[in-house]
Length: 362
Ligand SMILES: Cc1ncc(COP(=O)(O)O)c(C=O)c1O
Image (tube, rainbow, N blue to C red):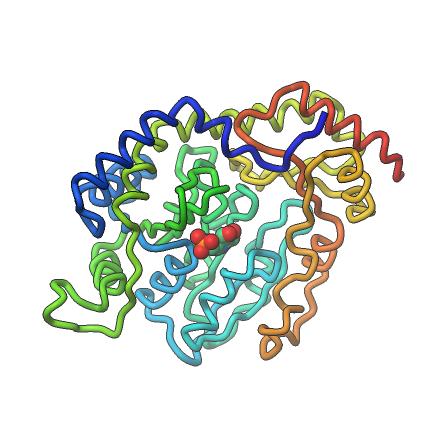
């Protein structure tokens, strides 16, 4: 039996007819930019997250760029960011002329901690960008207590909750999301959003995504053209009521892995204290992760080492690479994503665990 790393198609199959009908309806209506579907999606997602304001934008990378700018980050400012994340987290800082200051992660749960952030703070730190990696939730409250505004990159964590029922991406002054097709809530193209509790910030963001204008007549800021489009919003609205069930499917898949004895063979994903992750990626730890990945691939089991070369070791980040991050280096070496989806069955999990056992790398 082969088991793919993702399965985006099966969960959407029951919605296929409704999605097709909705797409036809939007094309027929002929309203494509900032129309009623975007406004309704923004309201519905904001309500679900418990976020007072939410704005759709073109993708999760732009969401970070706009949020940083709205928070007042500009050339020469420092922004603390983990090195163990997708490139976009740091790229969004560098592209506006600010400095990514790379901080370490805990190699057990792959997120930043208050200690790793504290060690990276400088007198010029304007914002701390935490990344809720793989669906885990970084300890936002502890980090916010350090006294610097926290921006949450929740691209991988929509649907993850804290123990007291709050939502990833709505725990700080602003949080960003990606609707890249493989994400927990995936569009049929690019899409993103920014949630915020701050009305003034929301007003700023609404202008920044629209050429720095309120009406396309007067231009108050040098902005961007970065909108979630009407078609994506309409389709995402049909998916949104299913997000909780899909996230529960991901939690059930994690339980299947544990029940099948994966924990005897590799380090299971560790939730950050006090959080209930909707695992976007199911990332195990193994001292010989790359060899394990090769053995799984040979047996038809999807797998991937996402961040083998962390950001402080990437060519474009050379100006900010003079930093020692032992936790990051360990995570880069030991992590391996194995199949995860809302519909991963007990049998499939058993198959994956058998393949890990047969790899016999202990
Ligand atoms: C942690 C993280 N941040 C930001 C992004 C950027 O999102 P997008 O691809 O929608 O621009 C991603 C997407 O892969 C991500 O995983």
